[in-house]
Length: 290
Image (cartoon, rainbow, N blue to C red; front, side, top):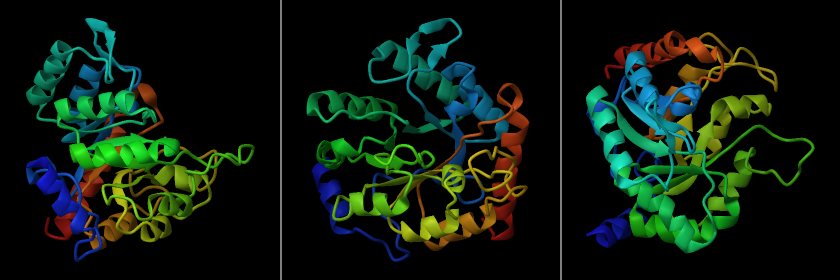
């Protein structure tokens, strides 16, 4: 059944709106304002994964993207998020997600090894949690990644950190490089677009999304107080991030992936600000009848 579905997805590379076909869609019950929007647990990296789930629910978010290495819970700090988690810890994590009505949809940013046996551990981990997107910057592993994407029907999004002027070998900051990297590859491989890091690289997030049309797997959607390397997060609609225009572009592309709020500012008390971001998207949806 998995192979049949995967073959169908591969044949139907682009939908009518230009969005990539991929893993099974996120149910509408986990959407706000027409988008599956929630938190990147990195926003709460001073807390545990259990606490990140609770805080995500407090913001109004319904989905979560975990990151590697976060402690599981206050009483299980020895267990870290990632493919080496024992099954009993994964069961506890699922119980916490169910308790707060939050769905795990992504994991990253994580390295994915070129070695197939090692890479397979990440896809097995994602499968156990029901995660649909692995987020990485492991460009050297793309052949292995493509093989496992087809086998597991799990998407992979290439994430971008800011441009590194002193390191010309760091290329994933540039959406043109990502577009070339995934050209001709399975449509479930594309970009996990970090709009804030694009801004820190001096790039217009809306133009970047247009360039990547059909390959936008998921987002780390940010609004920053200004363009440039020293900018910081602000609630949606109050900065230079063109958040409304970004949402307009995603709708135009028929985007069906998840949006993670990665709020890297006011670390100890960012729940109210993230809730404002969720509220912005809720209001956007109300305005368009979603």
